[in-house]
Length: 370
Length: 89
Image: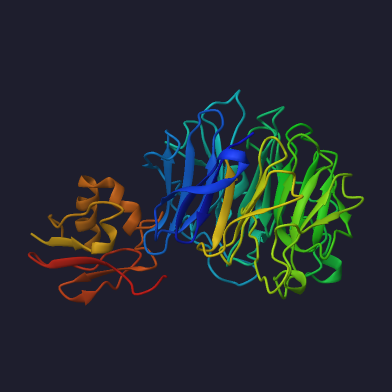
């Protein structure tokens, strides 16, 4: 069981540790005043990564090889020079897409068979690969140059980005990425070629004849079960979707507590049928239904859901939980999430009860067990 | 020789002391600076070598005009200030 998780916020990085009687507390505060937007840990090396969004100075990555004692800046991924005359325009807004990293939006590692392998997703929608733990990065040109990439469009952000990366624990060559808005993309050859894998997802924000278009989809977050990698879950802009066939097809789950709208999703690494969501009133509102924070849990692959509320605020709570701000540890028993209103919660019992670790933190962008 | 001075706010991320370098354009001057201080580059320029959206450069008191090409002339002995725009939060 993990005894540490990291919390990346608009104004700094917080390290949370488990103490006596399984009580959690904030043990360390770092980079106060800086926007830490994403955090990741590599269980192979034990290294931690923090991705910054310095408003003036651009995105940066820091790496720690000693569990946060000291940090070093690593090389940032960079787009290659944009060829003269190449037009690259967001189809939703008609605005030019810069060939420059605006935000690091996903950072995941490969398996033990590929030490040093990292995958990194960006806004705009570039995917980068490193084989040396982040000392150097290479843009995956096959996806960036794919003709359908020009159809990807911005959603909440001004341009499309890659926010979820699932590396198949059985096969390093097999990687799935989720794009808002651009659907699910698959490589089976370590990134040499890509196909869209969004069959069954539904985009109700599009005209009727385009709602099933696999490239027009807005998955908010995609996660994969470690023990059964053929099972994946998506919290989509238009609901919850589930695949049991390696993302060959997706089926919609239409009932899940107060709402099927949200951003975060967690799946048990050990049990593919157990997944959690943090619902919000659907897209035009983006606040908890009735001002009550609830976590929904299925233990039967989405056939039924429980509403978990013990320890969570049930009056005048307007917490929204972003896509990377909800995580489960490797045991499948410990969960943590942080909200836009600076609240932080952790559970030791699969979500049955929650301990509040703060209600006045900076807005939380990402939570990750390490 | 032009003298290049950086905003105080960049210093806590990457040390950028004032430096005297040669060069007749902002591009040439900054390339000299980054040759000595490579980590500073990505704090000032984007992936395409253009000035970052929320950064500004002053040459002899005038704001940089060519933010993509950095072709503005730098007279000998000019003061070049690399500043941040009043934006962000």
